[in-house]
Length: 614
Image (cartoon, rainbow, N blue to C red):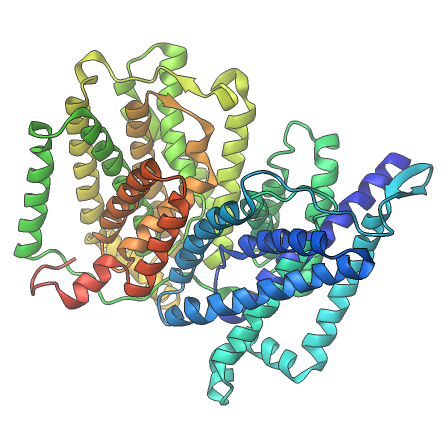
């Protein structure tokens, strides 16, 4: 019993740092509606900056002053980011700031390696709190007791600030209805900058307070950002008390999960989030109306079928790609094959997002299920990889049927986070079920048959299937089914009033998108000859979002162009330099600022000839 008390106290100490991170994210989203993927980067910068300042300044005042000063410096950096980058794209579709912050996260990771080096850094202990105190006969770090008190103290200060100060009243009002606040004459630019600085300060303070407990490293941003999103969603978007309650819940799950549920410890957090969202779709302390206003959908001009110029361009492009084996070497064909596969993956995600209005943070689940559906067939039955062209998409369809049934009952960022939860559950099963999936070692030898082993032949097979799949997606979009789905996306209430089954239509759209992603995963398994759990991971889902947003949500060709640009840049830059994330992130941010509607969105507006269509 004593041991469990100590473990619970350890969880409470971790909860304070998580609460600082999540409360900042919740406040920023509540006012600006930005899904800030770079929030973990500010947490990491706070830890690195605190390491530098606390090692320079000695004594208790030096340590605590360094912690607060580090958070303040990072808050100023956050203000600069908001003014220079985010302020310019507030009028863009709401997902484009997510793309910009993803680019900033890539840039920050390489920047900290250049400044502080790639090695882990051990910060100083808090003066006077280096030792331990005895609780129930067990030693407990004295510094952790300070953190346990700090969390509720910060919660109380935030409550007083948001409830009693004039600026706090504006923040709460903007969280409820920022359009009305603007109509009353409030300077939204200053309000957004102030809110962003406050959120970044809290995140950086949470990172700075971690340095006496664990090493500082350049991957900690990605480690904490997913937990932060989970906490915010469980607690309820825009709710600071909800963020505190969820932080305690998540920290205790982390503390006890490995002890009580060792088989599912890696996925326990996402199981809890999935259960909360299914039972209480707006989080523990969230409000339904806030979730509705936080919808991540986009509104665009009506889509039109391609005109003659569009069809001519499409046919010419396919003919050009079909002729590539005549002039390209094996490496070029392999790279182009990979780009084609991810173009199909992006097109399938666009079917769900752009057409169905359902944002997915876990679309890699269906890509990975397609890859593993093929790999398991080869491993256990010795069947040729080509049979996986049936079993891979079928397994992805089954997963989409099950997960989609729950997901379409939610909307906005809650739906997106539930897709992430299901994807992480599948990833955990694959990672831990070593006897079947091979775990981290993956499944090897998933090669196509002898007839398709030549890179040129496999390239032509991929081109044929991807072109057919993209053509099928385009046909679906302009069919009565596609028009009905778009009606449900643009005006759910009106669609239901005329007799459309909104959930049923969105569910079918979800399932079809999962099936097309599964086909892409199957082709990817044959290209690489092996399958590993990373085909189900969060980074691949984020890559899919980047491809779709980079090309543009308002056009069917956007994801294809976005996939080509993103994958070509990633492959070429990563092979040319060690700081490829810095360069790629910079390119993404520049493209977002230059083309806030996506590359193809700008082309449609400025360059497209009449009759070219979508």
